[in-house]
Length: 77
Image 1 (cartoon, rainbow, N blue to C red):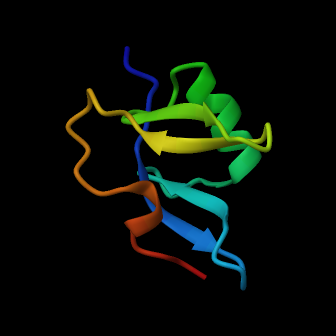
Image 2 (cartoon, rainbow, N blue to C red):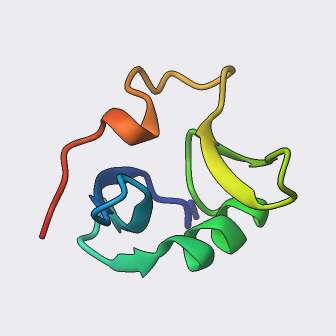
């Protein structure tokens, strides 16, 4: 049984940073929860990267068939 899901929409703050994601099943997750799920392989098409400042962020998996960058996904309120 496949328990993974894909990110379909994002929410950004006034600084343009992603704060939340919406999965295919309409579940809304804070970005830190989405990062934890991606580390466990529960979100399709994403990988977790570590930035220069030491913080972690989601990025599209280059080996996946996902075509849009996470930051370019449609937004929701």
